[in-house]
Image (tube, rainbow, N blue to C red; front, side, top):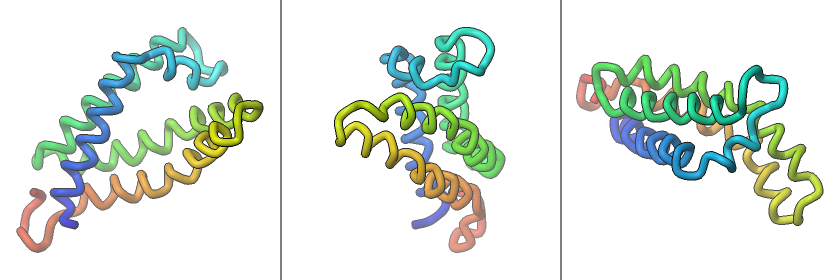
Length: 128
């Protein structure tokens, strides 16, 4: 898959996730590590805004490379929330625990996807 197409698909994922932070914020509030200052809702809102901004940056060829790098960093930065989710869900059903634990290694392919999305498309000779 070309980096440009990959970037657009990733932009769609990021936009969907960003919108979800505003449509159903309570589920995201519970993932915010208690060690972070301020209210969980402020972090939920900030991460939703960041995801929407990253989606826009990925969609535009002029900002794609920088946005892809920022998206990779974002995926690394939200890893503690996934750890918290796995810990908090340790007493839930076997299926819920499996979902929470599956999110942990999922960050690696997401980071690699973001890196790929920021590569120049050599077949077209341009970023998009």
